[in-house]
Length: 214
Image (cartoon, rainbow, N blue to C red):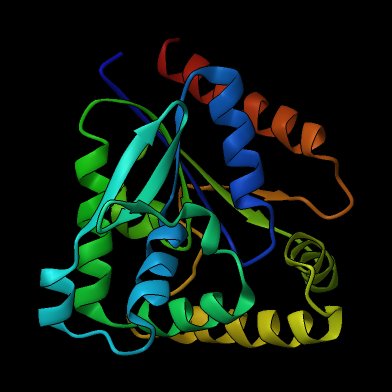
């Protein structure tokens, strides 16, 4: 198999990265979180992003085992990108067309050959419209906020407010809005363990594989 792509899209806190990491680890795929690239741009450039700065930015993505690391000027910044403050800026600059083109090219360049699980907001609609399997995760708003607050250590009420605002912005933006791809399988992660979600998605993968080879 020269290339196989699974996309996992959905709103903030729905469990995209968690399940994508597990799928990659257990099945020999590489996990790419497209949101991490937007967060890296937000971390390095803040809101002051323009074409010239982006063109001169020394941002590199490196495959490490079954995931990627993000480097800027040779320094690994992967573990600095998870705060909600960075997420807010990332959500803003993700609405800029030339920024999205930059990120999409970075992701596509990494996936010329191999098996990948890619998560984000528009992976199945824009970056890889012909992905082999498309998953769209959803979950209750408050549960998503609890997960993110636990992950970042930030205040639940503030995280809830931010996620609700981001949901609205992501779904209403003009460029690559958050929508479920027509050919995606929707999986509700509310009240489910990570193993439950994993088994459900693996069941979908098996059905897709069997249908294509029947």
